[in-house]
Image (cartoon, helix red, strand yellow):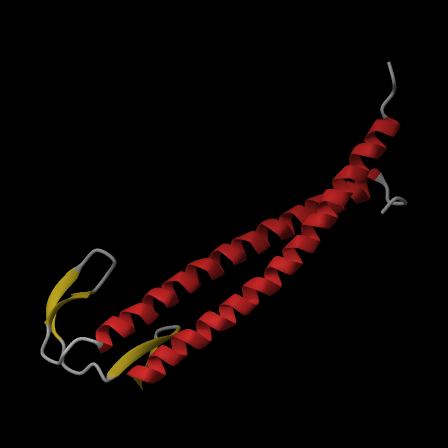
Length: 140
């Protein structure tokens, strides 16, 4: 990095900062998805404890609930993405959530490592850039 020009250092710093920001957005998305899957797993657990015929409120959206009656808690519909749902047994549904959570946590750990390396590169480029700017700047 020491042999790079000011323009090259500036470009490297900007590129690294942009990549760190993108990685941070991905980390936030993974955190959000993990929380949603954990909530779904907890909901499945709670649902499995309720007796058939139990009156309950069914969420249609985050703020709209309608009254309903629990018909069969042994089977659930699992959203596997892009508008596809698969019918699974309760244990299969819980297992699906746990596998997805573990996958997301693994991806999260890998992204943390990459983001840390990119941040180090950006920081080092910033220090080198400041050093070179001080050397170039006329002393008064």
